Image (tube, rainbow, N blue to C red):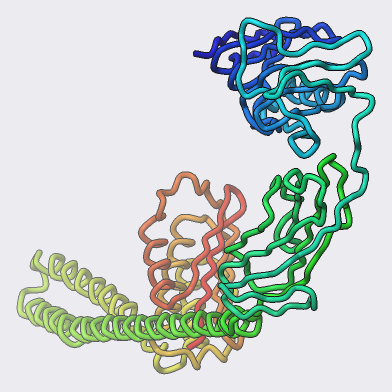
Length: 512
């Protein structure tokens, strides 16, 4: 069971390595090293730091630790005698204080190849390592007592040559010596074998490799002599590998091989461009189809609106005819009957006065019905066209209301469809009626202009105006009617007013 405690300085929970504690050692820096059967711990100033295989030791089991006069640390493990420079220990401690518990030290293993053997069994009742006054380290081995002079160690300073032996792609072996390998499309499994030509403890050679075109940094793979890749996309690659000898001397130049994985036809740029072009074409075709559908619906709605307005106008014509030819004739007949009755009675009869009043009422009602008949179906619209009909209506309205009206109507609007012409004429009628009733205007301006694609109608007055905030969300009945007529023509309706600034109504409809 590992002993744990709270480190208040780093605000972390720290534990001793699991297993039995086999030795304690104070180093030259005053730190206490605790040797356990599953790792190594350092205790100083209340801070506990653990060093295991995850931090660069060759194995977790530790027999003893000793530091020499040069500040180097010697750690006995079943994997061999490990040498760690003081700078490496200092860097590991600094990383631990930053919270980097995975920092790896640079350790040199002195194993059987250099004649160093340590005991695989630990005697917990005796001291199994010591430093003599001349700086030598004395320790147990399986064959007796070992002596190490840290100042006179053999050193291999020759960096090992590095060789890439072969490249295997989907079980097909390729010779990397020629370089410039071109692998077939859809290559899935790639293995690259490499080695270092060192005959002094070759089992201690370490390797790092990097695949340019995929890796951003070197991959430290320890003593492994193969690299495996299974997710390479088509493209150009360069595989580089470097190695160190048994004393940690690196050959930084290493060896390299260039190779290319060919692209399948559907992975090429021209194929992707073709697919993108086809996709854009489909999107454009779908967009055009949608526009045609929308345009067809708009034409159908426009035609339906035209039919609706035509039906409305036909009904107005019918009602106007009934009023003119039916009701008016009946009223005329009633007036004539009253005249006959008036002649048959005596001149001094009181009935004369009543009959005269009745005849006056009938004449007034007839005048009103005739005006209503003309309003329901303005004959001038069919006889004169929209432009002249508007001028005539503005002139008549100005005479009856006493308000001067300026009317400027473009003669080209006569080419509008009957339904559109009738709707604009009705909007002008409604706008003039509203201005006369509510605006207290002294001048009204009517403008009707046609361009190549639209017709614009403007009715403005210099009346008192009003606050639009007093209107409901849709406006009054007259505004609703005008807005609906403009909407039936797929047009826009604008209404602008303010207190003391008059009122302006603008309608813009497509020219048809």
